[in-house]
Image (tube, rainbow, N blue to C red; front, top):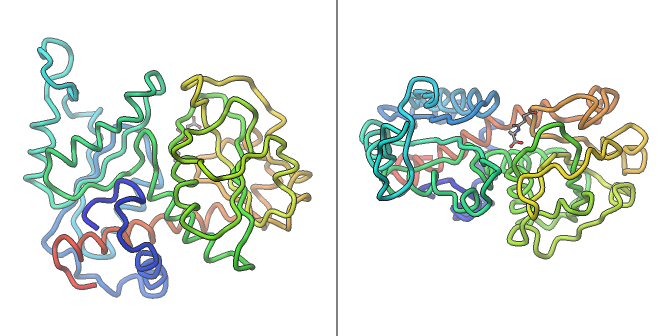
Length: 320
Ligand code: SN0
C-alpha cells in the first residue's frame, strides 16, 4: 500500500485490521519504524481528532511530523491547469506539492468539499494532484468524498464491540444546522461493504448518497423501521447529493433519542465527532453506557498507526 486515499488503495484489508489489533495490544512494538523519516500533515480545514491522533500515532513509531495549516501562513494554492495567475492564488499545486514532497517522506491532506460544484468535489483533484506532483505517499485526512481513516476506525471499533458475527449496522442520517459533506457517510458505506455485516442506510427522501457508494445497500426511509434489532446505530449528517450541498428541510424528528434506541437490539451508538448535542443526538443517548464515541475516537490513533506502519513497510521496506 503506497497511498491511503480510499479503501481502494488497501491491498490486504484483513492484514491491515490485524496490524491495528496488534497495535492495540502493543502500541510501541515498532517504535523505531519511522526513524529518520518525516511526515507533513497539511490542513486546509479544521480538525481535532485527525490532527492529534495522527501526530500521536507517528510519535509511537518514531516518525517526525510537521503540521501545516496552509490557510494560516501558507500561500493560497492554484489547482487549475493553464491559469494566468493574476488573482489571489500565489502558488500552483505543481510546485507546492513537489516541494513538500522533496522535504517529507509522507504527506497527509485534509481538504473538505466546497459543496457548490458536485463535479469538482467528486473529481478529488486536491488529493489527486498531490499524489501526482509530490511523488510521495499521500494519506487522505478527509477529502471531499471520503474519510478513510475514520471508516477504518469504525471498522476496528465495530469488530471490537460486536456481540454477533454479522451485526446489523444502521447508518442513520441526522439533522444539522449547517450543510456538511457526504464524505464520512460515503466512506463508511464503502468500508462496511467489505464486511459481511447487515448494513442498512436510513435518511429522509432527497438525501440519497451517490450510487457509486450505495449500490446494493438497502435504504429504508422510515428511521424507526431501520432501527429495529440494530446492533450499531452510526449517526451522521450530510447535505443532499442530488440537490447538491443543500439542506432540504430541518427534519428535527430525525434526532437520535432514547426512545428510538429502545427499538434496537440494545445497540451501541457511534458518531465520528464533532457532534452537536441535542441536534444530532439527545444528551441521554450520548451520555449513556451504550455510546462508544470516545473509544471510537481513541481508535483513530490505532487506525492512523496501522496505516503509517503499512506504508512504511511497503514503500520504505521498514520491517513490521
Ligand atoms: C466534518 C464533516 O465532514 O461532516 C468533519 C467530520 C469528521 N464535520 C463538520 O464539519 C462539523 C462542523 C459543525 O459545524 O458541526
